[in-house]
Image (tube, rainbow, N blue to C red; front, side, top):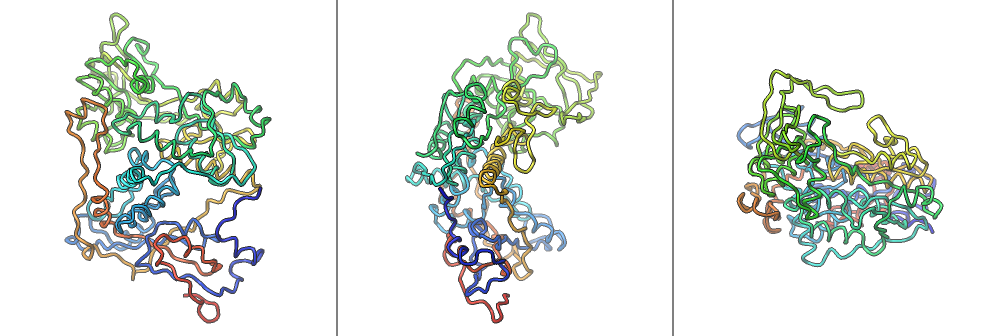
Length: 589
């Protein structure tokens, strides 16, 4: 069957083969920049990529009109190349749903979020927040917008008000695609392809969906009921899920193709934990982070000594350290080779761990786990003088053996990364690189086998859940292009700098104190696995959303515009775009 027509094709048929600039338009869009939500809806739906985001300058010459640093005009102009939307790996336009929420339109905000994100309540809790890092309100004025928190509040509102019914997908393309792995990456690829109209099957080795979310992310950050309901919502009624199936063993990749599948996306992740091969790493009381967190999540007794050492300085290490405190450890210490300024965990993750009582020893490497009777008793550490990078990209600390220290540890947990199942990848016949990962095309994530693509941790470079999901979206677009004999269409117009008449002056902004998010007390937090961040009510977030400076709006390139009116039809605000007659001679302003 033919692929479902986009909204604009009703006008494209009449002008097939004509370049956009040759069309004589009877009407053309005008944008009310002061009303634009900058939600990105028209940008992604425009058939000719004639719409782009414009970023306003923010005046920061005067030291007294805001808390942030002063900035010279050339730096203000440079900052217009950044935006919260451009920083989102998944393609969200946060300014859009913040503005809809500020209008008291949570349903509009939910529709905008759900159109992009199959796991909004999940990312509303555990996203690494690159959008907030790019928020100019936080850079120049006071605090960044609580974009992640708003997403969580909107997703919870949608669930509580019956707006998040199970999704349904069109089945308008008679081609079947297999997605291997039921984690966030596999789910995203499956949802995107199902939305395009393909018939999609997810093959999951275990008995349930969730992947690393199910195995390793603690409930105090992401309650199980949240991710379970969102996976169920996203799968809906049209995506087929097969549990207990080990693709690569039975069935093989070849058998999937023989069975009629036209493409395969591998999103099995990196399911094996790692330990550093130092003396004592096999002692009792020593384990890897994935084993420890899986035991805790599945209710298996996880031995946790009074003194616990977590080796590693990333996000997983902070989760493990905070979990160990809840499992009865009195003294939990994170040890990492990086200095304090270069720890891979995000700054707020480290702060949360320290606030709960975790100690951090930066710029030290473990030399050995010590014991008299094959049970961990202590760890010997050596100071790290510098960190080198090997040819395969792995970090190698250079240590000073004269500067050592020993700390007690009845439990040692290595949070130093995860590994792919190399034997399975070899059995599939996939080419691997020097680090053991799959060799993939940088642009399409295609593997060495025709019709087979990789996504998420398996494709490398996915250091967070949102990045894994973004990589799966990229793979899904590549599969669509492969099956339709085309090329992936990811090109969007470059972001532009708005004219000076659109400049924002902080002194004119509404004076609002940034919202303060609430957490349960430390004593309560450590006594259970209840969610730590209470968040705020939707009403409080609506008020806080008015702090958004509305840095961006959309602009139409009339040389590319065909006048189809799609932008006006899809605009959620309704009063931003009007279709007007072109100026005399067909020229545009």
